[in-house]
Amino acid sequence: MVSRSEIVLKSTIDSKKETFILFFIPYKNKTGILEIIGARTVNLISKIGLSSKVAKQLVSLHKAVPRSLNAQASLIKNDVKETATFIVETQKYIEQIVSEEIFRSAPKCR
Image (cartoon, rainbow, N blue to C red; front, top):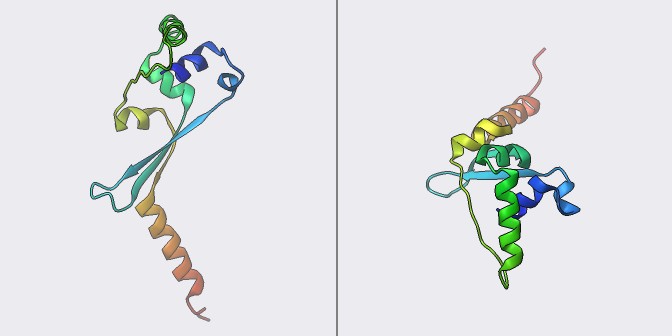
């Protein structure tokens, strides 16, 4: 949350850059990737509801502790999907690639 607070406050050189976060959602059995969700960091921060006031407090607290501060906020998958710039459903994508390859490699009929 500290780095997200820096983005809200634009307090460092890196925090002024536009960033993007990718979420890789695995199958329940962890054998592969079901979905890839991409979202702009500022959209996720907005969804969390991180205000400038709270961001200032987190950055201040981070500076006050002797080593590091570990703070977290969580969103569920549907929250992330609501803010997503894109969603890749990998099974559909793989099926599309395979069907295109089969079509490309099939003998041409005249």
